[in-house]
Amino acid sequence: MANETSVKSTKAAKKTAAEPAAAKAAKPRKTAAKLQPRETEKPVLLSGGNPQIAKGYGDAPVQAYIAAMPGWKSDVGRRLDAIVERTVPGVRKAVKWNSPFYGAPDEGEGWFLSFHVFARYVKVTFFRGASLRPAPPGKSKYPEVRYLDIHEGQLDEAQFADWVKQASQLPGEKM
Image 1 (cartoon, rainbow, N blue to C red):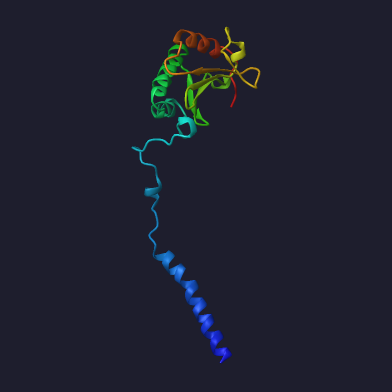
Image 2: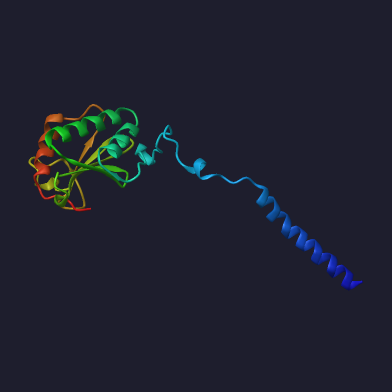
């Protein structure tokens, strides 16, 4: 009788183990098409409202980033982009680390400027900002880097254009 009980227990254990496998096999699987992001979906906003945009080179990823910037910050992004394009003909653009980057037309000269969205402002990074005159007000732990925090309604376009012109003529940051 002890032998009969152990046979029944073994059969019950095999049946129980097979049930999840059968249930799993019957469950419909997501197709690759469903896993692809839809073009109409808005990019995810990370903490502080910074858009999550895939790394890419050229104008298209930068424009996607700017379009995804929340509220008044999108207008600031368009104005910054327009000033850079006007000031530096042939400027190179990219999105890296969820931030637009701008570089000298010659790829070997590196990047001179980037910006990033925060909850209450847009932070512009001048990679060789300590060499600009006057230097942008925000200091960094890196001696060469200077920041410009742009709050709503506070973009001085003339000063920004002057800094962009100066920054584009300095050796860029290679990243």
